[in-house]
Length: 340
Image (cartoon, rainbow, N blue to C red; front, side):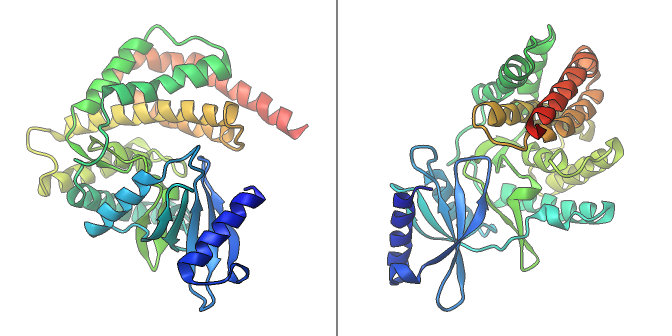
């Protein structure tokens, strides 16, 4: 942050609390894959707040503020927005601490326990937050996300063409997503975006929320960054989610459990392909480090999902025989270049 912007931020924070600028104590509190940065404010009485700095030329915080207010009004656990200066891109937020959910992932038992609680929170989100105010997760958006894979992962990172099976797979994954009930979708319901505060889960980073497929947030969690569930564990978690959704009316009897599991595997393939593209874009375009090391993990997720979709066996074969060797080799080369 430039000194001028820091001065503007400090002045705004001081005004919100009736303090002099020299009384403002800000400490770095991290960043994310976007251009947002966070600072922890310690007030004279010892209470703390989080300051989000989202440069308006690169980030628009309007959606974050609107969604936070709507979801909080619905009784959902999100940070309270104390004040906002959208023209400057400054937000004053409730401090939820420093414990994202993945820090509670100590072993298989703890992962399953906390995943169960997070899946319950998805149910609360879908039951309490109307999808009506949100942008639609329509075929165009699903397609643009899928196209990140051939553009950024294949063409620009690996310099290899998409296989002949790609158009059919792309079409099928979009159709499977659109066949599901439409709910409020956080869109990055990953353990890193769930904060543990006073033993309660809070959602953050929801500014990209959409009205979209019932299974998407569940897939974000089960096929996330920090754990790889085997086929039996994945199916069991999906079945538990399915049964709860049937009980509270999010799913009807017209959707059989085997049908829903297939939709979830297709949704998981869509998200893994999107993430592979995004991580390559973050590396190549945005010059952000650390994302290439995560590519093999999401390639594992992709192969796990494709293994359950026999109608796409040709694409799965291309992934294992051509994509995996090329991606692994390219990651080794990139790591070698970084170390020299």
